[in-house]
Picture 1 (cartoon, rainbow, N blue to C red):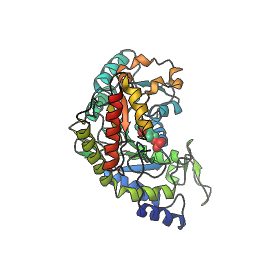
Picture 2 (cartoon, helix red, strand yellow; picture 1 turned 180 degrees about the vertical axis):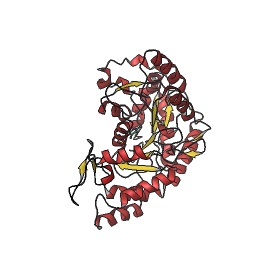
Picture 3 (cartoon, rainbow, N blue to C red; picture 1 turned 90 degrees about the vertical axis):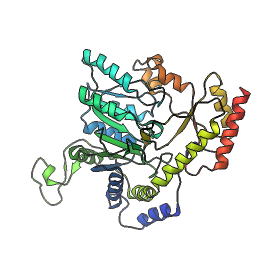
Picture 4 (tube, rainbow, N blue to C red; picture 1 turned 120 degrees about the vertical axis):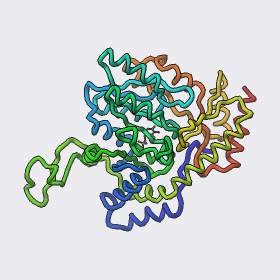
Length: 383
Ligand SMILES: *Cc1c(COP(=O)(O)O)cnc(C)c1O
């Protein structure tokens, strides 16, 4: 089976992890801050807080932005459930904004319209999570303008997008958002096995996320609410979690970061080749915004009509591990029970009826790719 995504682990990655195993610290040592510094510097952000997953990073980002009961978070329905669940963890409610039919990202026109209506109803969101689907950045300038106009905060869910650029600047630099979140799950662009990171230029937000990542406990007398009892003293000043990343994960992440640019350019090479090979087939290749350099986590084609499922099945039968990113979140049973109607977001549903993620990862060979395309071509002919 050719998977849709796969990690690329080098001997240097393995050596980096083994070295940590032989060191003094398996957790809470020097590797996590080093990883944070490397990612922050790469992206041009002031601060980075490493955690055990992007899901945890999204949760901490929402808490740092003081999202709570009575507040609303809006995001795209075409995303992984974690982009929405983070609001529910905080006791806030979730709503969605339909996607742009060209980029498949949250549509800024739909966002503007929904904000106008929400303002009249006194129901504006506190946070909007902009998900860079497939690695292609959202229209951040438009979202930032609306954020200033309506007073909401912005989290970029850049789980697909490390190594990409928006308007010639690295995704993660925080020019148009409060916090940017990356995922280091093995299918993503660089991996730490499990892991995530939240980047920000706001020291107060970074300090708060760092505090909450480790139980809300501080050893810094400046943050304590009363004088330390003695040198053993630590103080819990908030209700936090154990969302820490291990040293093993950080060492793998650091080692992977040295190949980030190669990984992304390899993905671009594969995408260009897919674009060419698919030209003669009746499918819609992904559209790339000229203002962006995508991380290209995913290469999603659209197959119109009733053949979608047949094509999907036929590719799986041939050993091509296609996937569908994503089942619109508002159609999940858990969200349906909150009263969402599938028809609420028609562009998301149209996308869901047609989308297929083709295999896309640095180790995919041209031979593999030719097999994917010939299998797709045969599948389309059969329908
Ligand atoms: C993978 C992913 C997440 C969650 O990442 P984890 O590190 O697995 O928690 C969140 N949002 C999006 C868009 C993702 O693709």
